[in-house]
Length: 133
Image (tube, rainbow, N blue to C red):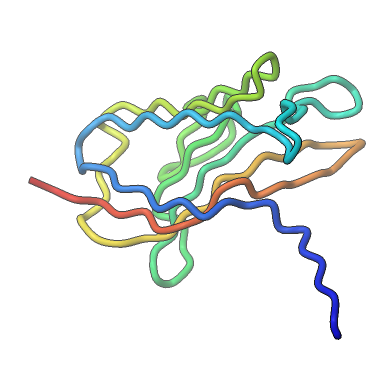
């Protein structure tokens, strides 16, 4: 009998958003025992977060980050708030950012730290559907 081990902690959640509407999503990260997930690296620096939406060709067509600068459209910086005090990630994008055509996409929401830990953890994946009218 074979044993299986999975290191994939991502939860599959399908999201529907309306084109040209504001987008708000708040998640709280907890461990399997119910305790809060630590959103700081070993240097006590907050993790960064990215939310990326992909088309059928695996190209990023929309993205949000917690970074203050450095990304280019269609990725927008400063849209995700990482709160280590309550282990939450909040995406708050105004309507001008949600301009994708109606249709189905896929997304990945992940957190990551730089040196010295160099950790990346995908926390949510799924379908990202845009509806209109």
